[in-house]
Amino acid sequence: MTVRRTSIHGEWSSRWAFILAAAGSAIGLGNIWKFPYLAGEYGGGAFVLVYLLAVGIVGLPIMIAEILLGRRGRQSPINTMRTLAAEEGRSPHWQWLGWMGVLAGFLILSYYSVIGGWTFAYVVRMAGGLFAGATTGTVDAAFSALVSDPERLLAWHTLFMIMTMIVVARGVKSGLERAVRFMMPALFLILLLLVGYSMNTGYFTEGLRFLFAPDFARLTGAGVLAAMGQAFFSLSLGMGAIMVYGSYLPHTASIPRSAIQVAAADTTVALLAGVAIFPIIFANGLDPAQGAGLAFKSLPLAFGQMPGGSLFGALFFALLVFAAWTSAISLVEPAVAYLVENRGMNRVRACAWVGVTVWFLGLGTVFSFNLWSGATLFGLNFFEALDFLTSNVMLPLGGLLIAVFAAWRMSRKSTESELDAGPTGYRLWWVLVRYVTPVAVFIVLLHVTGLLGRLVG
Image 1 (cartoon, rainbow, N blue to C red):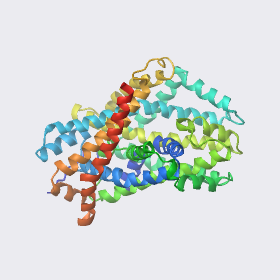
Image 2 (image 1 turned 60 degrees about the vertical axis):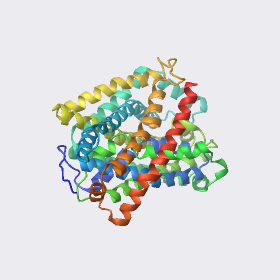
Image 3 (image 1 turned 90 degrees about the vertical axis):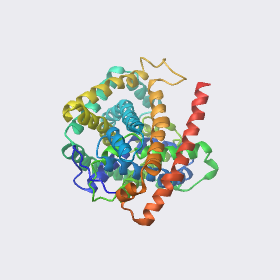
Image 4 (image 1 turned 135 degrees about the horizontal axis):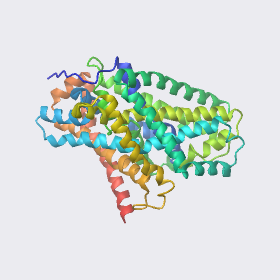
């Protein structure tokens, strides 16, 4: 059964435009900031190997399923799930999967924008030579001064949101596609420049050895789960972004081939970020297992001690800005598409409503680091609670439900005609998304439940 719907929002001009946009959604702070520090914490190469396996077994099948749902529905995630559930004779309650994805993206953007503002601030600081010759105390003091000043954080948060909304308001081709056609090549160029810089540190081989030589003695059970979670979250799954981008994918484009190329680009950026970062860390005698402070504390200290460090440090944080920006525009799109479809708004007005609402919610994250720093729930401040809820509960649950709906609730005729992957390719995807992937995501959720139990306890 072949269904041919048309999106009222338009389409990508080509499959490559979709790949750039979806890769931009997937490539974010998680690839360049989070992946390297997780690899540092959990033993380098062993973590990377588990991560790569998880991308292929867990992330890719769900990404294919999410694009499939989006292209077949051709609407916002909420309306897509409502339409497909009715088409397959399933419960209308499946629309809540769409609502959860839109809400997750909405909540993530509220704090993502604040962190994106940090990256802007650090571009200016690095370019201005603030960290040249800096000590650990200087770097720590600079970071503390930034996050403890609510007015400064608010200004950067506001700038980041305005930039994001300007892109989304211009529409699919004039806004989203035109932006990613510039930002994604720029992101790759900056990353390659940083890799070239790392090659001249004298510690490039040591960095490669750390990143790609597995040391399974250092890989714990928590590391395996972290690798699975990072593979899932770094692909931007379960938050409505890939589904709504899939709704703009031309019918002539191959979904499996497109998804593989997006996953490959996302993984390549994560690995290149590690290749660029670890030689710089080792060249300055720093510990690669620095945790979340790797980007905003360890790296400024390292760049400050190296020739040309101010320039390449500014390039590194510009890279983070582009990564955060391309992800942010994808987080806005599902909510904007829903308002256009269901409330009769034009894109500019819809963007204004979404942008202002997200901006206000972002105030909670801004104040988490200063005015509200003492206010916690189960030991988590506002920012940490949002991050835990979205990253550890809503996204894996959304991914699990996407797999269940695509493999168990949709007819084989519907999925087979939409994928057009050939008998062998379809069978492989069907087995993975029906049996293997849900079990893997369920294990992650059980781990999260254990964490939640300990927090409550």
